[in-house]
Amino acid sequence: MLVNRAEWDAEEHLFHGFVPRIMGTRFDLLMKHPDGEDADLLWWRVMDRLEVLEKVFNRFDPESEVARLNALCPTEEWVEVGKVLGHAIELCGEYYHKTERLFDVTLRDFSLVEYDKEQGRVRFAEEGVMLDFGGFAKGYALCEVRTLLEEEGVECAFVDFGRSSLLALGHHPYGECWKVALNNPYTGELVREFSLRDVSLSTSGNTANYAGHIINPNTGDYETSQMAATVVAPNPLDAEVLSTVWMVADQQERQTIAERFAGVEFEMYEL
Image (cartoon, rainbow, N blue to C red; front, side, top):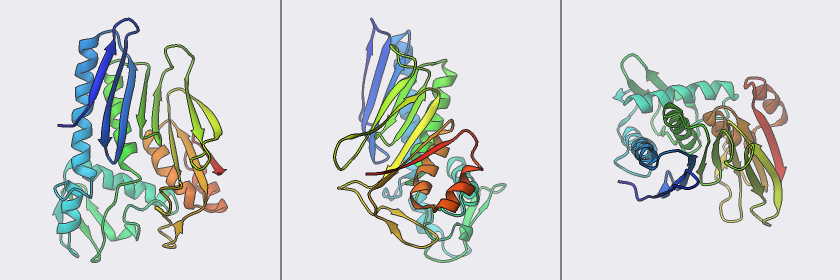
């Protein structure tokens, strides 16, 4: 069971829950809710879902589904996968083509991955292919969390996945939106303030302590510049995927990709 804490403010009808570490970072949920017990039950539904997704996508856990797939999927051998992992692989194939092959969870060549949806199975065309959902899983999880919140009629909520992946539903209890600051990780100075309402925001880039982790799968080169990319989108998964893509795409690729995603805002910043 995930280590977590939660509290409900009866006077303000505000619920706040957080997990110190899930999917490699901290998770926070703040929501306006009229009933403390119902809010707590919803929180545990969110926790259960995050725990399931962690067991699917965490490749560093040898017991996770993706780790077992990477270990058991030799050349041309089919391996059965669950519905969540199968759906994720299917989506990754769609993003691979829509982003000029710049989003690639193999970091090599996604065309080497074959997914049989009818049979629920996967195989790799060459040895050495591995799947890494690091730039995908948090966005996928935010989509699931949003569904849970909307099913329970929650209209105002803010979900924070390590400050890099955010979901804003409705508005802050004392404002017309949710205000979010983007600070320069090297200097701490304010770069931009966002006013979010019913959208997601994802940020990718390098920091002084965490650089050289973004790779261009088409060239094999790591992006090490002091840059950041932000994407605001109605779909949390679009935002998550495209913020990483924007870090490695050239000007022509950005123009082509942007035309395929309606209602999405992109921005690059020199830090």
